[in-house]
Length: 290
Image (tube, rainbow, N blue to C red; front, side, top):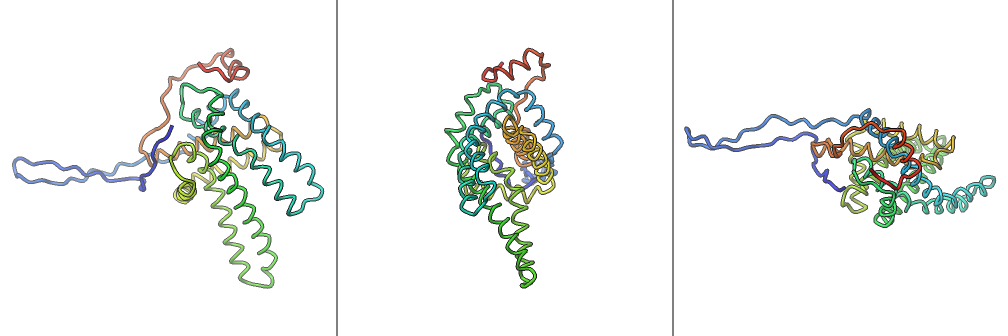
């Protein structure tokens, strides 16, 4: 499932040499620029909705494992809701790290779904846990620490703006850090499952992808935040919402990858009409595949 996106330019020039027999000279001819397809947020969303529908049972079942891991955080959050303090908040954030193995599993499963792997089983979820739990733990910790610190910095600098003008500059810098981290987090876990990269390289590449594709990434982040809020308010987050967000990020990354690989990396599959029987079998027996 791994492929390279190491090309650094969105369009490139290819040179060819040929021998002119008449003039006995070698000429270097520059081919016209080959334009790499620009990523389409609409196309990513279309594939995302299709993947959720076609794999609804697996999405729900994987999400339920994540919910089990999330129960300690939920109980701690309910208990400290009336008396929130810095130590209690630290305990809450630490308990949330228990969901990191399940995240690794959900993203591994999402990668196989988004790439149209013909052999998808629920055991792929457990394979992802075993393969990615360490990286997932680190990336989730970063995803909790940086927003928490920058949010705290925004609150602190807003307090000192009236007395120290430099507080405005520091507040703006903190805001930009938070915004760009929200953009780059879209690519953290998809890079983890598709690229052979160290953790530092994942963070660097995620930032570069976000900076180079701000418009596309902003659309994905806004959609992600809207659905995350909707899923949280309705409780769907515990049934299938978390897995659905994983699929959204994975499809967004795969759509963006075309810009660097120059080709479609989703496997071609014949489009077939699904009968009601197949649909319900996917829901109630998601561990089976056609």
